Length: 140
Image 1 (cartoon, helix red, strand yellow):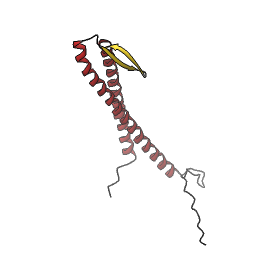
Image 2 (tube, one colour; image 1 turned 90 degrees about the vertical axis):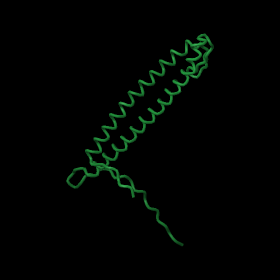
Image 3 (cartoon, one colour; image 1 turned 180 degrees about the vertical axis):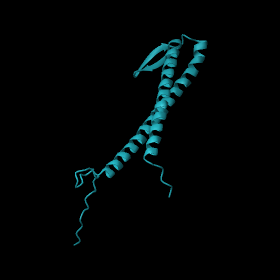
Image 4 (cartoon, helix red, strand yellow; image 1 turned 120 degrees about the vertical axis):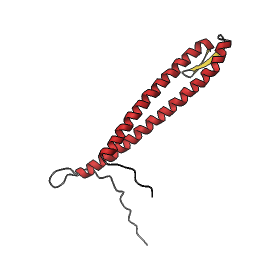
């Protein structure tokens, strides 16, 4: 009968006090760099995702406005249905078009704000990589 011994999973090393009572700063700085690198990547990914989502929503508003502009020119009092907070509300085209334009403009402003935040965060990330001499590993 063969006996097997299970290996203990390795746990992440935390900075340890050395014999002189000082932290192992080499490990601590490596851990700090790794955590911040991952945080920068995550933040940039989240911003890019949100920007993409809002751009799609703004494009949908533009398509609806293009369709409603024809109805506004021909029949401004034509019935129109709009989803507001999960409730379908009956309005006229002349009431809906200005609200949609305002919403689209607000979405575009948020997109530009997020794009500026992305550029700033990307610049901070590049500075971080430059400060700690981080560069992509060559492809194998």
